[in-house]
Structures are given as structure tokens and as C-alpha cells.
Length: 76
Image (tube, rainbow, N blue to C red; front, side, top):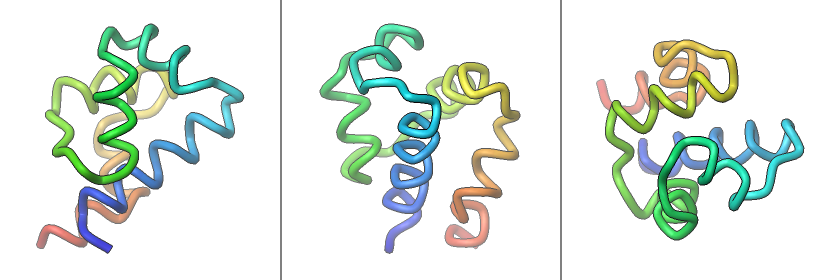
């Protein structure tokens, strides 16, 4: 898996564990559904600004998201 796919997979699982649809989360953080879907599929890079909004939504820090997803290790 690419780092982007690891991050996307983790974010998707977080979203599903919170019981949110992709539409609900995209509205919460102010990005389009299509863009969030592409992030979850690992087809797009996720800017730190978006990661920060996602982290806030999940009550996590940015470093938690990057570490728990495996992204930090994958890009080293």
C-alpha cells in the first residue's frame, strides 16, 4: 500500500466507526464529497489543513492520525 492508501484506509475506518456517511463528514470539514472519497481511496494527497480538520472531527491530533494510519513510517 502507498502512504496515501494507508492514510485513506485509516480515515475511512475512523469515519465508519463514528457512524458518519461520507456526505456528513465532508460537510463537517468543508470539503466536497468527491474530494474526501478520493482521499479515502488513496487517489489524492491530503493536505495538512484537511488532516487537521479531520483530526479535530475525530478528537485526535494530527500526529495521532499520521502515526496510527502508518503514514509516518511509510514516508520515511
